[in-house]
Amino acid sequence: MGFATYARAALILATTCTTFSSPAEARRGGPESCPLVISEIMVNPSGTETSREFIELFNVGTGSVNLGDYVIGDTNETDAIIAVSSGLVLKPGRFALILDPGYFSANEPYPDIPAEALVVTIGDAAFGRGGLVNSRANTVVLRSSGGCEQRVSYLPEAVFPGLSLEKIDVRGPDTPDNWAVSLVPDGTPGRPNSRRRNACDVSLRNASANPDTLHPPEQLTVRFDVLNSGTDTTGPFPVILFADRDRDSVLSAAEDTLVRWNVRSLQPAETFAGVETIPVSRPFSGPLMLAAMLPGDENPRDNTQALRCVIGLPARSIVINEIMAYPSDGEGQWVEVLNAGADPLSLAGSLLKTATGSGSADYGPLLYPGDYLVIAALPEGVRTRYGIGTPLCGVTGGFPYLSRSASSSRRVSFLDATGTSIDEAHYPVPEQGRSLERADSASDGSDPASWAPSWAPGRATPGLRNSASYPLPRGFDCMADPIPATDTVGIRIITPEHGSSVSLTVFDMAGREIRTLLTRERLPAESHVRWDGTDGSGRQVPTGVYILHIEVVSPDEGKHFRRSQPLVIVRRR
Image 1: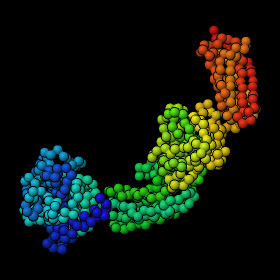
Image 2: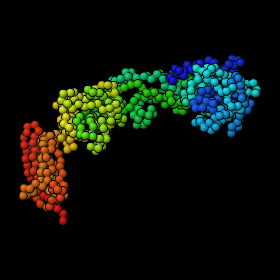
Image 3: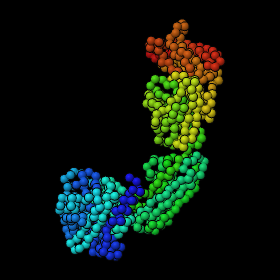
Image 4: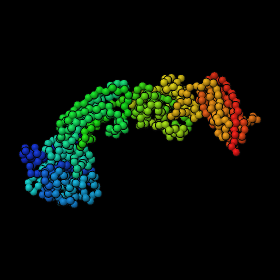
């Protein structure tokens, strides 16, 4: 139900409201000697209608009122007001809640009835003759034994299920703009109305940002109005534009204040118009919010407004850094991205896109400069395989398929929330179980020559520096540490190129093979292997001199490198 519907219903109600015997009474809101006013009516309640109707009264006078002197009902029948547990005396400035007699046995309570509200009932089974009707026009009547009378009429068009009819200013007149449909389900029985006019109350209106979509660096113009909708003059207060990092619509110390407007005192119904043009050099850390920070505001719900503004990412601030297009069983496809910029970035609304579709990266926190994010079809499959601690996220809407065929498009793009492509990768045909790494994040990812197979021991480096990005060492070497070794031996292997085929075998001094550690394993240019000092059967070898024999075949030129060197094992006794 939209606001326009509520407003229309309020007018239908108000045009048939109380009539008064004189203009003076109309200005005061009721007969001079009548301190009680009808402040809320529940005509069509949720739940059991025959037990949850209510009428609320408010004492606008300066003295206490005995409700035993009043009757309540409609033009067909009125009933005496009966005490429940706290008597019938209503203090000034307090609410009396007249509940249907069936309410107390129906076990459908209204929540949050204040303890200070005077709860009473009527001396008949229902209000008026058979309850407050909502299928035709009706008039609620409040009458005292001394002759005071108030009438509030309503039409069925003004009645909505579960929403009460509220008087906005209980001390004001029954004019068309002073009655409205409640803003909250079940109304506000026994407490101030949701549509009331407060003493201290400002509201933000007409907030806008122009343009509503931009890419830094650009300029952004923000406009708004702030209205004093209360009855009192305000003191000075600020309106603040901030980036809502935690998306809770509340300004906190950790969030960026972008602009501050200092609003002078506002008279009732006075409006302050704010406007500011600001340079945007980087994406903000959250959605933009405006907040009117008026101390003591009695209705803070309308003190904030989110700006409809989408700020894109700078070009190449996020780069596609590694691609697993042909994963091992159970691993699922994944793409690793890197924040290559200088600022923390929000990836909210970003997309991975291929020729077959797109999906939104389901990642909420900021991604900081130099950090990786692995966007995976099966996040837990990636974590199980690699044991990584780097951020992982899934994809809302399904992971877009990464082609591995030589005859189809092997492209994937990273798009920001505006739909702009921030980076694109055109990768070579992949090998199963081995990722494709970008050798240099500054290279053109749309050039297949920028990509190379991962020669890391795990055949991929999700969340880690790419093996292809390490500089090539000079020459060829194989070093063992410590020497002599008492238990486990660490072996450092340096090859002239990434992806060289490496075989490593341990022999004894008689030339017998003791243990094969590597067999034509493709490795990065620098890698480490551990030997636990056992033979092929898992038995510890005795103290002695052993031979490490390594063979390396260059991936491009097919050159062979061989080396043998001694290794001493000394067992503790």
